[in-house]
Length: 296
Image (cartoon, rainbow, N blue to C red; front, side):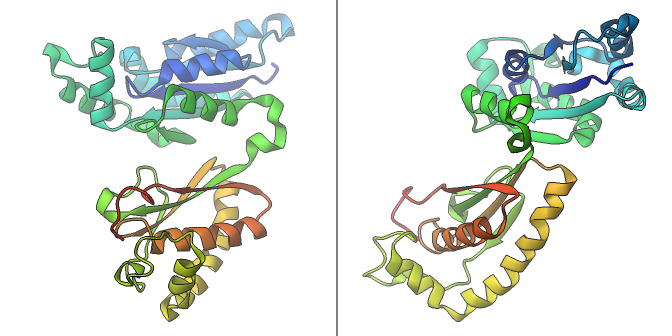
């Protein structure tokens, strides 16, 4: 039997599974939504009937509508991989507020919201899908993503025409302010509020950590040098480990009070340093709160 590459799209209702499946279909995947997982081995056998493989890539939508069949998912997936097929799971989720907002906008009924109790339905769905989430190779939080962002993420992960580039890990270096909340989905979070604060220097207060004079002030703090002596070697060690493990996205976040001065300067410095020394990953830099307000 010829190998089939299978991508299982699963996750919370309202998290964007339909968008992800549509994106896979546009990439040339043979997609089926809500197929009971017990039928997957038979489907693959049919696709390879008489040794004539007609479909090399399959996208499979799985969610709580599968009911009792969900309990057999892990067993079926392991069976499929034992037969020589490649299978990986993409799990989509979002925070409760986003899920509620999306269901309110579409006026669709949540599959587990019995009696119209949406919050209870979402909680029940999280529990029902916990095992699948644990098995997932990639988890995407779509709370802050547009449908276009999600489509690009799926294309980036599963476009066969991008070759080695598609297999690169994307490292997002992010600055933020703790007063505005820790970024969702951050893998590594560093608190730099212990550093000298340019906010209390009148000449520096109006500017951001992107300005040379502000960055120079932050870097002149002796604690900054000691901090970087620990953080940079750690990142040089960790990035190849995450890459080898198969992680597609890694977010390294630096936070100060308001996300304007110290975190920005540190994120800029770390971004330039690790980008110059790591050719196996792609790097992006984003300052979430740099212009949110005037406080440091």
